Image 1: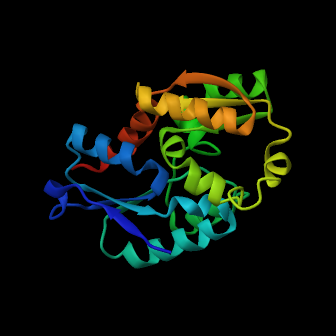
Image 2: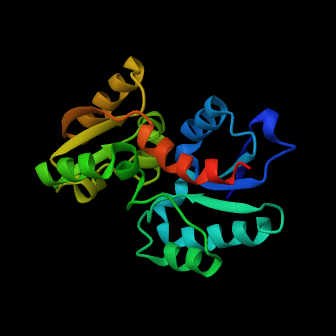
Length: 212
């Protein structure tokens, strides 16, 4: 398993805030740091494949906190609960560290109200973000073994009725990919534009107060 750091070149020497983040958020987080000129922030991303083994997330996050807490004035975790059943929050409470609110990235991209409405409209919904649309084959097909055992598709997705693409930007190529993924899974397709505003707002609440 590889830990990788999303480096924003102009802030490497002045970073005093560390964002420990899910690798599935790397693209959006780097963009937000650059656009807002948060020169005091460094992003360290954990492998997105951890979502297929959520029980490992708390331990990996703890290891990164232990490794880094002497190097930075503040640490913030860009994860939801992400299937850890509250165990990630247990780790963070030990260190007094906060995280993004919500159960998972789908909720903090869409916003709690919109995500709740989507979930209530159809409980059997499979969600894609930009990252998952790009890496569907690696994380979903290969990650779940569908490439070698296609009969598992019904086991994993038999109770789903639709696929909702939560898009962070208006990218025709990703929209086409998301539609293809929906057809592969045999699900109704729905497009829902989210942008990155909800994530930006939550990060800004933390990052700006740590800027001085």
